[in-house]
Amino acid sequence: MALFEKGFVHVYTGEGKGKTTSALGLTLRVAGHGGRVAFVQFMKGWPFYGEISGLAKLESVDHIVTGRPDFVDRRNPDPVDISEARRGFEKALNILSEGSHDLVVLDEIIVAIDYGILSSAETLKALKSRPAHVEVVLTGRNAPTELLDYADYVTEMVEIKHPFRKGITGRRGSEY
Amino acid sequence: MALFEKGFVHVYTGEGKGKTTSALGLTLRVAGHGGRVAFVQFMKGWPFYGEISGLAKLESVDHIVTGRPDFVDRRNPDPVDISEARRGFEKALNILSEGSHDLVVLDEIIVAIDYGILSSAETLKALKSRPAHVEVVLTGRNAPTELLDYADYVTEMVEIKHPFRKGITGRRGSEY
Image 1 (tube, rainbow over the protein chains, first blue to last red):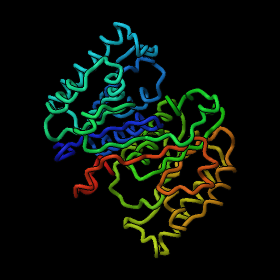
Image 2 (cartoon, one colour):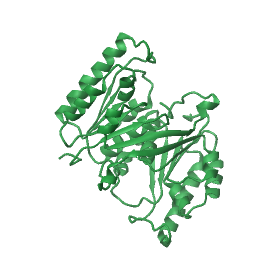
Image 3 (cartoon, rainbow over the protein chains, first blue to last red):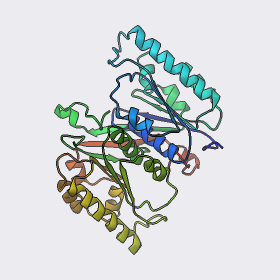
Image 4 (cartoon, rainbow over the protein chains, first blue to last red):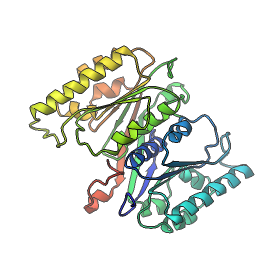
């Protein structure tokens, strides 16, 4: 039986910490309730993220990672960035339309849209293709208005204080 | 070996969704890196949270739940609310000062402080008692200035859009 009678759409956006992290937390919660989760990551091909082995510990979670290890140049994305994003999108579209999972996370898809690698129109269409019980989380900065309008929950993570400003870079276990 | 060379303090606050959820996500990430986590929950005695069985799937996580199943009356907390919060606090204090865990989550401790059940002075003292490698997350609305000043990361979850406003209550797998 599906976990959700009606699946909602969450957007986690903003400059602050906690977008992917919240999606991971929701995954843990849904897995705890016995639900099935697809966690699709965009532009995250770097192999040292803690979520890779963390999600692997949860047997009802399918983790799909796309992207290159390197950062994407927003003004000049590599052809591989584009093909990797398309690969993630096709996977996500299949998973959404099949309705095989209670929760589908599209991690950083909003960044791929913001960079012009994917479109918000095709993303909206994919969301609308899902059966009613499928809950979806989209994360990333600079969410476009069409997605915000369609979403049921929108949370903006606002950075009030951050040590990187003091010159500290991302730390293993905290940022990745 | 400790996961963090220097453990930082995170505060997740604000009215929006994603405070406990982010703490759960950080737990998953740290567990993924092989780190040990203590997840101490305050005012959360209700037994149907998805995080209970979710966290139980992660073998390097100790989950300590305190509180009654009922909501706490802010103007008139039950003696059990107070004794439960104290039980959680003493546990947390021991765990923090021992330095046995890489990450210590004090979930909703800020609410207990806001309700006057715990004090920010004793919480700060507990934070300062920890060895340098221990990372800490505190969650809850209405974080007091002293905690914000002490924290390294402060993120405010701002609710932009929420279906409860349309009359929908918390849903299994999403809010709990």
